[in-house]
Image (cartoon, rainbow, N blue to C red):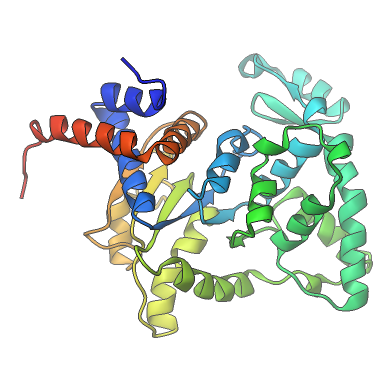
Length: 350
């Protein structure tokens, strides 16, 4: 029977015994061990997690000190902002699996941009934000300023008056990250709607392309961020999906070691939530062991792969971690008891 203080953590400990459930439980427990002992955690977020409203749990996790750095796609970055300023104008389509081309054409004519079972409103989101962001770019061009892509969004979201909020600000991870001044990289930001909008203004000579620092400069800056984050107990890597959001930041370790020829601590934890099938040549489907050969992880790194839907797994894990953060002694007791029970059944293979 679950306690009133930690119902989700206790549910996981009680029910998640085998298969993907076991991997989820073990990843959750190891995450808590790491941050509770003073370690840091770096998140890599691919997919459309902001449209899926991951901020409901990610934002409080940032405020609680459970997340210490982020690598996100340009789409996730802007879509967190959209959920704050245009939430009431979103439309959901629960029956999307049964749509025809005609249904999606109708959605297009409604000026909605469908993302699985929800949709982003063109005018209330993209065009409304464009009116604020483009003048920021033009001012930077005039003044010769250069900033990272996310820094423009940090400045923008911190300047929006509360009267313009449609979504709950407590559920906006971008707002939480901006207030916390979390280190961030947005690799491949050109591959986003506002990346396209920025390119068009560069083409029109309204803005200079140089006002946005490059991906190479992101990596050079990440060298310094990683060194700071990896002090003490080290920094772990928590990845949702695959692609550039994950591959870009995890490469910082071998790059410091081989390219800068400096000593560097390996990632202290690794977990990937992915529904990609493990396969030949697929980064998203590569097992963590492969990363050992690239000097990103070591054989001693706690490694976990949860082959499931991140929209289900990540909020649950974050909720349990928030419970643990609020009640660390009770959390430690639950985890200790769960591990003791499991230990009896684990066969040693070495």
